Amino acid sequence: MTNTTAAQPVHGYSDLHRLMSLMTGDEKHGPAATSTLDALWVLYDRVLRVSPATVDAPDRDRLLLSKGHGPMAYYAVLAARGFFGEELLPGFGSYDSPLGHHPDRLLVPGAEIGSGSLGHGLPLAVGSALGLRAQGLTDPRVWVLTGDAELDEGSNHEAIAYAGPARLEQLHTLVIDNASASHARPGGIAARFEAAGWSVLVVDGRDHEALYDAFTAPHPGRPHAVIARVTPKR
Image (cartoon, rainbow, N blue to C red; front, side, top):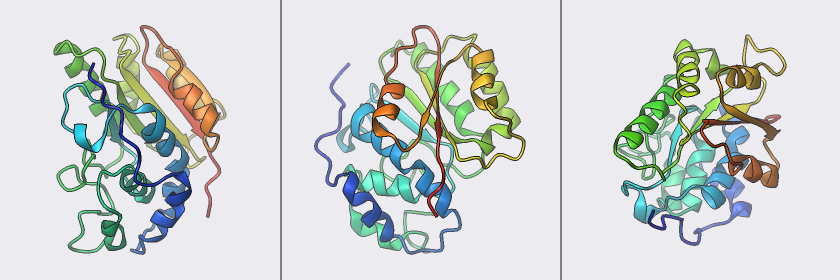
């Protein structure tokens, strides 16, 4: 595996709220954005082996943003890591801006998928992991960020049920649990993954060290799910 770890970031964690404040467009999903901020930062800062120079490298790690609504935190982190300049942020959501209310992989540097309609990211991540396996690329890791309510979608049930028995070790799912699901029960998210044969850890979604430890925990022969519990900042 070539070294695809990102170079020094353009900005640090302390700059993220300033970067988010530049996005003054009509964002109807503010809590959805802020709930993902810490987890996204830890992934891009310390875990994902991808950089602006290696966004097309076959052996890069991939992050698929399935929770595509409320992408302000995602855009702020990408800007902080140097995937694009912060001068794009004030145009967020405007007619001629590449930074739409749902990311477009053809317009946003570093975006792996276009997202918006919930329920597609995890199945796409399963397919990505299978594709890498078929090519003999066993080092790249596939991450997908989903929301707790999104797991109500049937396509996600099928993806979870398939990935465990298929032993997709390269597949990692980060679930942001901000208690927004309509049909949730306590512990239900973790139990669903565990029943399908996944490795599962539940952590505080604001605790960077806990997130890092969960993201990097070994899980030989099994896909890995991290359930990050957060209370949205409003």
